[in-house]
Length: 112
Image (tube, rainbow, N blue to C red):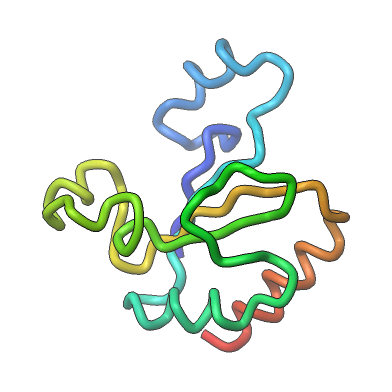
């Protein structure tokens, strides 16, 4: 329902990112799945290629729910200041073939 990626022209920091990331915007993005945390969990549980992990630094594609990991101890209103909702997932794309990742994301979204 919402995508946050500095490579998108409508991202509030797109112009800054374009100046700083002259060779591409990278493979890290976040997006909201469904309306509730349970929707995000169901989505992640449906993934077959992308791994659920707390750390997002690897050659494999990794995904997490920030409000349950990196932002667990922040109050909800503080998380919202950073654009993190209970159904936000953070995805770090790895080196797998793009078609495989798209297929995995598509089939997992179908269960939400």
